[in-house]
Image 1 (spheres, rainbow, N blue to C red):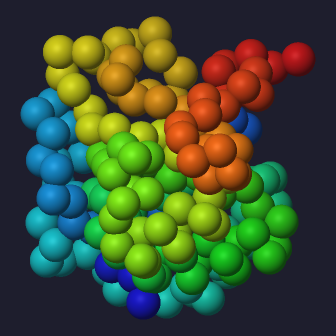
Image 2: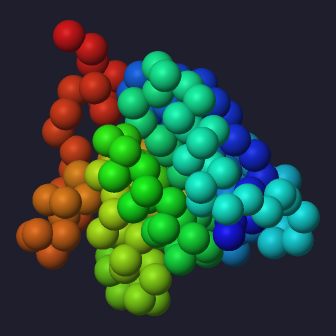
Image 3: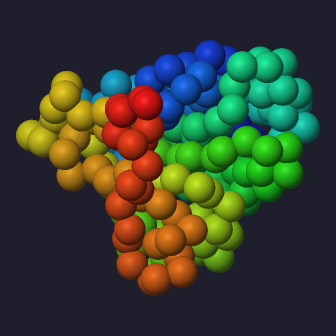
Length: 171
């Protein structure tokens, strides 16, 4: 069961292509300049189980990817891990934003490490107002990285995603 702030069924700003974006309710980071401060409280939101969310995702035949946003998805790592497994079983690319860095998540809770293992892409690091840039694709501030999670896990260190589509280049 996940506590959600909302779902956008046809996002084009949270990763390449048409995606479904799932917003977690609750965030411990409270980044100055956050564009979703209404997601900070852990109270409120809407409780949904992973099968309900999968049905919503499957309702958009154009969506090939799903992005977890927030709030902080890794604050509900167990539920998002279950959801990520379901999504991957159905052929979706799964990405997640996190205010935590890859290195912090590698040393995080078991549930956080398990969620990380289910992701294809991680956009990591807190939003930093002083590093904000409107020219960045799929990121709000220049300290945030777009990471290839399988490569990062196999090498043990953060590996930037090289696919042009994750950098705004469509061929």
